[in-house]
Image 1 (cartoon, rainbow, N blue to C red):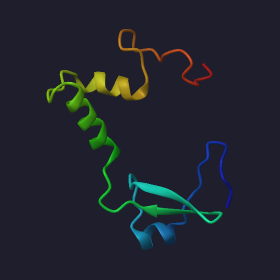
Image 2: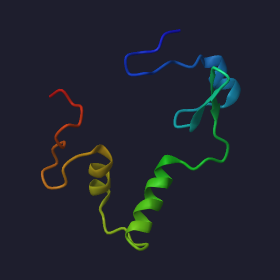
Image 3: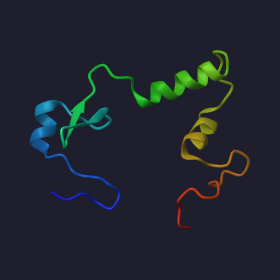
Image 4: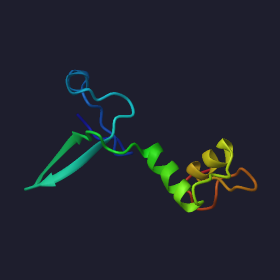
Length: 92
């Protein structure tokens, strides 16, 4: 098994099925005594929910943003132009 240039690795299907690692499952990496292990987060906070909670807290409980505005923000796009901001790592 090889790690891609993006740091990705494919978890074998037997392991995904056996441990309930479905698309979108949150996992964490643990480093202990020179070993790296990955484990499924049980009852962990989902990334999307964490984003919504931060927006709610920042706005006093009311999110005055449209879905499109939130999507632009999560993609790192410029709010006014819809273009990606400078130095986003995009070669284009």
